Length: 211
Image 1: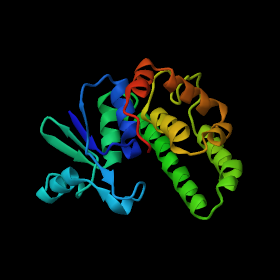
Image 2: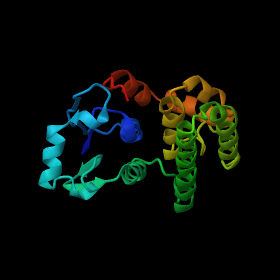
Image 3: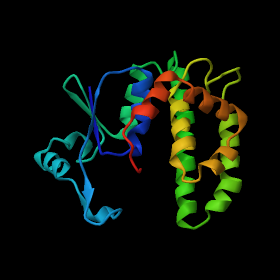
C-alpha cells in the first residue's frame, strides 16, 4: 500500500490516522516541494509531482493528490480514500445502517468547515467561534445515538471519531476556542481518540509540517 501526497497534513491526515489506528504498514510518499517565495503557493516548485501528472500517472485523480495504491489498484479523491480505509479497517460500524449513520455524522464536519471558511472570508471568525460553532456542534451531539461511549458510536472508534478529532484538534488556528465550543460527548470521543496508543505514536513520530 502506498499513499501519495505532499509534505503536509492537509486533506490526508485523517487517512494517516486511520492507517495508524489499523496498524497498517504502508509507504507514506510525499512529493518534495519548495517555494520561490516562502509561503506563496503561486511560486510552488514540485518537479516530481509535475512529471507524474504530465505522464498520466495521476489520471485516476484528475491530476491531483492524494492517491492510494493497493495491490496495483489506484484510488483517488481524499473522501473516497477515507471511506475505503475506514471500511477496510473496521471503522464503519457492523451493519450497513450503522455505516450510513457514521458517514452522516462525518459529513456534518464538512458543513461546519464550509461555514467557517465563509466566516473567515467575511472576517467574522469571532462570531463563528462564539455562536455558530457551539450551536452546530450541539446539533451534531443531539444527532448521536444514546450510549455510554467513549466514542461517538459506542465502544469502538469510528470514521466519524477520527474526522472530528482532526477537525477540532488540528484544523483551526485558534484551538482553544474550538475546544471551548465542544460539547461533552464529542469532547469525550476526541479524548478517547487521543488516548489510542497508535494515535499517540503517530503524533510523536510523524514528520513536522507547517500545514
